[in-house]
Image (cartoon, rainbow, N blue to C red; front, side, top):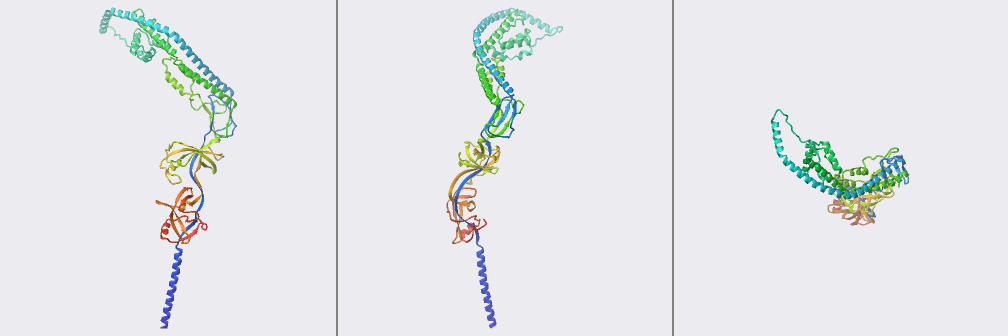
Length: 560
């Protein structure tokens, strides 16, 4: 019995020990299973919200050194891409080539002036001659009426003879023993520009009238060359006498000769009226004025070229089109107008010259301006960039910016924002990203803008990309939390407050203000000194809801 009782006591003790040991193990396990969270203290800081983008360096100040065709560079002291300093000598020129340019422009001006004065004199002379020509036309028209009557009467007398001649001709045609004679209309008759003749003769004839007349001349034996001489004479306003070309013994041929004389007088009247109205006077005046402007421009330019070209500031040579020892030749035709060539056109027949077209062409021309050398100056360097449609609401002219180029940070200031947007033809990742608030532009349309680079250094090179950071907003000593401490869902933004007494966390909503790349400004929901979870896990919301305890690892003691 004692032995059984001893066994029962031992078993009981073992059970008690096992229960105690199990309880200890249970308590130890439960404690070690607490959720571990990194806890930090909410503080205050200055928050600056910025917009980060990229731009391209440009110069808004460009110096262009002009040169004329044929000018010879004596020495060129710079190469394309060279950096130059204010006052640096760039190039010198051969004096002999400069004097030749001045002489050419002086000659063109003198010629234009003479032609303008001649046009005025011609108008005065035409005024004096016009009444006499009109009187001669009136007298000749009466003479033509008389000759027409005589020719008509002569035609009636010879009608019977003509009928007999036609009968005889038909008989001869049927007579196979005699050759068949035909009279073809010469081809050159229809090659005559009768419409231009109608215009030259003041519209007093029709195309049919003129064709019939010249056909009669051809049948009278007048050849193509003689007719060409007649038409050239009409264009020059010279009286034409065809009595030597045809048999003027008949009334019909006398009438034809008088009609040609009348054409000559009418052509002369048209030319005199053109000269009297001085239709080309305004054109000659414009040519003279333009020639004077070009002469003055050349004289001014020659003064600069004679002393050589000097840099007017610090910058870089971006265009160089002159070579030492060689005359300057533009890479493409000049946009200017050759004064002498224009006056050559005007010296032709004024009645057939396209005056309006010529004046329009002249108005579109300008004095030759060829760039021999160009410098982009450093005194006004900017970075051009683009803004999204949402970002442009936050960026204003005058805002400060930081430009980062090759590791150098430089101050900048927004100086231009375009009032209109431009459409990008390619995919732009910035159009998919909104401002720091997380909004999206949803469009490839962008707004061009420029930021001035203050005190640029050697890291700023025209044409390279630079990083731009624009300060949008700033708040001093405000409550801030790390971006990773904020949990966001469809219902809002939250942080987890830590209760040190109860070792629990509570999910609380927060109102956020501006943001940086690492921090949010907190307007409400937590305060400076509060303990929050620094980087909440996805399971923390459930732990907070069940009120489970968490194991705190303070940020100052952690490796975070």
